[in-house]
Length: 145
Image 1 (spheres, rainbow, N blue to C red):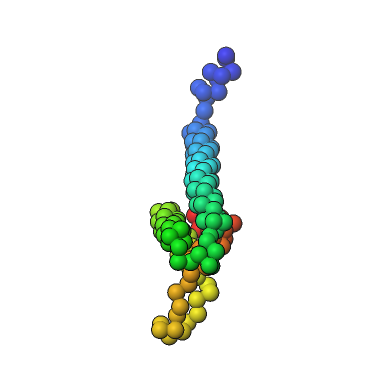
Image 2 (spheres, rainbow, N blue to C red; image 1 turned 90 degrees about the horizontal axis):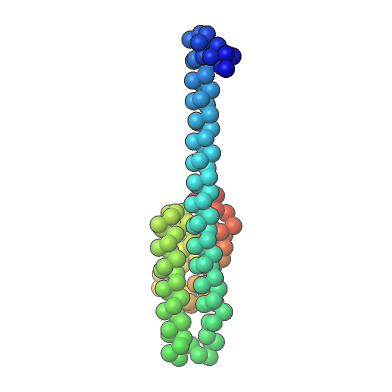
């Protein structure tokens, strides 16, 4: 007990300054660790949401109607489901990252031609492109989030 009292009664101002600097350094390190942990949790939550979106898209891909059924009612409902999935996933990405939203919508297969020469891509092709884009976003979360 005597030693502890001796430590705190006979200190120099320099000792107190060094102690304060050490405490500040420790607080800065704790703040950085906390910020990094929070960022990782946020990215992991976003990735989990993207995994669910990917699963929904893959399910739509798996139940795609055959070309012979293009004019059936189920085909129209499927096309609408694909468009809703693209819209919902795009909005989800917009809320978290503009870069991810832009990458999701990007279609690298479109060529630069006269507007009258562009044929509308089918919903299936659009779905596959968006799934590939979403896979790229999931594989490189640090670049987007």
